[in-house]
Picture 1 (cartoon, rainbow, N blue to C red):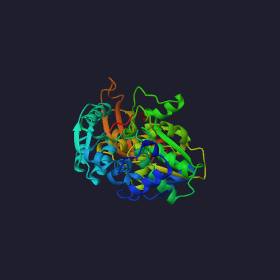
Picture 2 (picture 1 turned 180 degrees about the horizontal axis):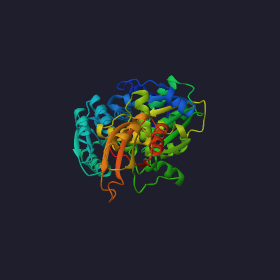
Picture 3 (picture 1 turned 30 degrees about the vertical axis):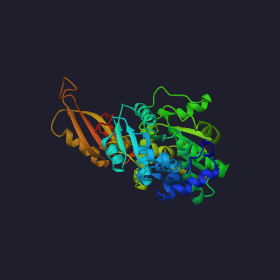
Picture 4 (picture 1 turned 120 degrees about the vertical axis):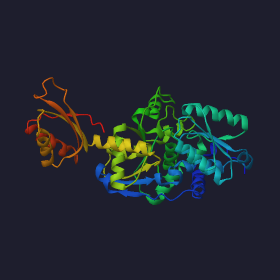
Amino acid sequence: MAKKKEYEYMTLPAFEEASEKVREVTVETKLIHSDFFSNLCDNNVYLKPENMQRTGAYKIRGAYYRISRLSDEDREKGVITASAGNHAQGVAFAARAYGCKAVIVMPTTTPLIKVNRTKALGAEVILHGDVYDDACEKALSLADEMGYTFVHPFDDLGVATGQGSIAMEIFKELPLVDYILVPVGGGGLASGVSTLAKLMHPKVKVIGVEPEGAACLSESLKAGKVVTLPTASTIADGTAVKTPGREIFPFLQKNLDEVITVPDSDLVIAFLDMVENHKMIVENSGLLTVAALKQLKCKDKKVVSILSGGNMDVITMSSVVQQGLILRDRIFTVSVLLPDKPGELMRVAGTIAKENGNVIKLEHNQFVNTNRSAAVELRITLEAFGTEHKEQILSALDRDGYRPKQVRAAL
């Protein structure tokens, strides 16, 4: 089968074809109504859980559709890409489904678990360079040398068309959707979803959501052209992109109604909200759309938040949980001064116990003052129910003469 020309992508027939094609390999990620997030923003919020998708992210959609459109000759030669994350596994899975060789170039800094997962899907992995740009340069060089087809993570109209299949599924389940929130890194997902949404239902609002530390699309839209950020710094590593796609940029300009940016601190809170209320693990990039809900100006609308992926390593997860507990005043550290004499520790512990505070950690510094009998410092890390309970504990300590000072928690 001959490869379609690029101008035939991002059309309604292409989206319909892609939606049928990806069903061969995707699992059904039905919308989940969220009472918690609905109450948070006074809208009816539905989650599109692509974190439950095969390979743990939506990326399999674009990769599979793109490879499906290759000629038999091109598939025989193989495909190549550069990625340290979800796209690598998406391409590897899709290529295996077609019996096609897949070469994935990953930065040398890629966590071993991601390397092994990609290899387990049948791909050949080449480690090269310290960052994605180095890996991408190597992949493009190998594509020229070996005749591989390069499958770009986002700046490819065929890939973007495949990602747009998400919007088709949303409309089938929720025909009267008012708003669709979509994460933005390079813009492949957002261009596909927004373009199909406007083709099917022009009145539907599609909002892109970027991390504040990597708002390359926001800056490009302001400039009216693709611009490159000097740096990209965010815990949402899957969307830590400095330059949006040039091929897909016109579609983003035309079809996105708005772009919202979200600080990392809001992603940390969103992670806890998702775990506690929906019992789901969603990676930081996938949480952009729920973190943005509180910025919506609409009320009583049907809103879909696309959760783009759920691939998060355990170490990152533990760090996010800890920071989230601190930001929510569920854990805090307080410094009190007390005389260095027997019974004082029991007294301060009694004050905390009366307020139902739970002590996690104690640090005793006898050298805060040259006169130890006058005062020594006790740092207490506590668990509380939230801000109101924390303030209640601090007031009790102050009332009992300990002059508490809150310090940054260190667990």
